[in-house]
Image (cartoon, rainbow, N blue to C red; front, side):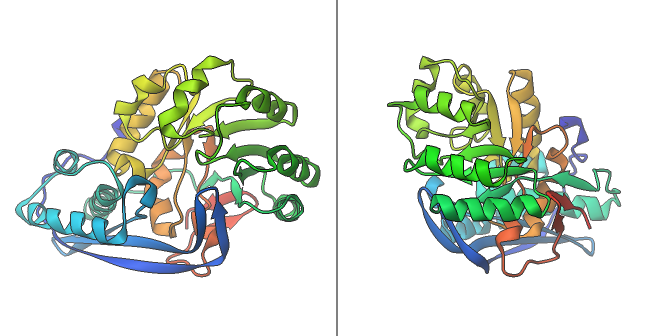
Length: 326
């Protein structure tokens, strides 16, 4: 995939950045909190009469806020005006949400400026997320999702009623493949037995069960289902430490700092024997379009962020468990 990157032009840009808030249809509940809106930062760059746009979602888990990301982007605007390439951007900004928005804006500009035709698939499969709720509520949501054509459900779970919630969802949506995202909420105590029980219920993958700082415990038992690193994996530099702990890595542009590093991470992960998952934050369809080149070949694609919005910008189409490029 790395060979699919655009040529690395040095270009001087005028740029600006600003924050947006997008209300959600319903509350989004995960193990570390509840959200009622998606708060994003947008970067626009312009050169030669052509504009490009990028978007990121600052994530408090990684020490980011709207204010810190806006300040980080503002600090690099002089370098953009003087002229910079995307590879040089990797050196002047650290991985994270701010670099993602700038990198994706530059990539979007290059696509338009050099009239690069869209060559990706017209659609990608996507999981549908079920947020934390009681077993009956999650079962009801699962049934509705299965009836709408969704084939893979991603269950957000904390440490409570894990097996009860999974059993309820499995009974309500027997044809769906199930993956679980604990968002670092579990502990190492009892994890081997819990993984065995989840495997018996047909769970296909478990994402980030332990806090990133505690994941060495994953080396202490044979995994009956693949375990995926999310909070533990940001860039290629993380891969050597993850060997023997995880079987899969979740690649998100807001962690890698843009598509440039994300493509390199995908290649490196596969060469190290990891399967790849493509993920997203709560975001608009702008962010999903930017991540599109990573969708082919991913074991799981999780691009349902915009489906939680009450209103989207330039919306992609989501139905029957797929997202369609429009």
